[in-house]
Length: 419
Image 1 (cartoon, helix red, strand yellow):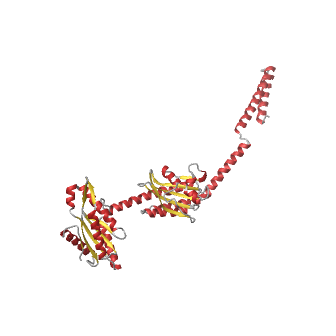
Image 2: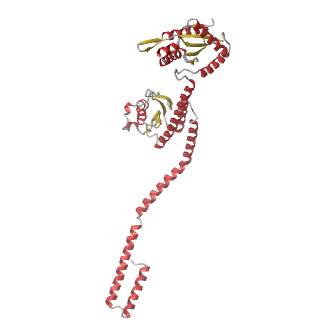
Image 3: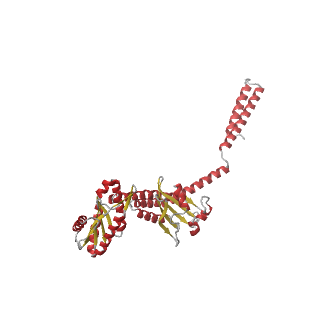
């Protein structure tokens, strides 16, 4: 009950008490009281000491629990440490992919590269689908698909989970499609036709501006983790920024090459194309027909109805001309004012005559409605054939120009050839 220091304290106290008693300083009663107080003090001291030891000394169960928790934490840290090299390699690989991705300025190349790299980073995927979102028409359009097995992707316009991502503009993970309360699996093409049970999906978005949706799916349940969803989000965030830049680049390119009013080529880009086609025709020994076209009495239209109606005439003419000329190697441009120019490749003189006359008839029969009036117009054309009429670019332009003015002199609403 008592330790060594307790015994020393009691012996000293008792000795001093007896010494005082011997010299008459204490009576017998006082001595007994002193001894009783000493015993009580020691008793309460030892009891308090036990309480302190009990309070601040953990039990064996508590010690074991803390040891177990520390072991679990050490195990987790060790697992994390073991995965660090693999994670470092993945981060390095992701960095290289992003560096390559941001170098693209063509939308289709961005979609294809993004899809190919998603295959590398998500090997457990059975299918990878990338949808482009058409904001004007408000629908999704499948632009890229990877299929590990021979399956048919029927949801060209998206599935119910893609619509969810599009509506909420949020990433989505589903571990078991048949058990997910957010979706009716009987309405899903992916679940019904390809037996898809789990997937991750993320919008290609910049803030509220959505450019598309990416979906990575598997037939297995719980095939994807939250870490992989976060990885996909990194891909889609960077991909969205690159896609938006590609769209802006394309718009800038169109503005630099196309007439703002009519949408057809501007003069300089057209002439570069014409030079290329003439070089190709020289090598392949084929013909190119070059046509210059001018709206008859265009100033009168502007003076009578106003420049806004004149602009509508030019837009209507360009639309018809572009449709007739087509884009199979041919081209049309606004040459200046009310004058247009076009070329037709792989043609003959007879075919060119028939084509030019057909354009003249279509345009002369076209009209605009303005204040209950029908506004019509006519055109004059001059058409030169390479290489019969001229064997170089400048000479061909001069011949076509002289033939146009010949058509004007001979009464307008006319097509002129050299013969």
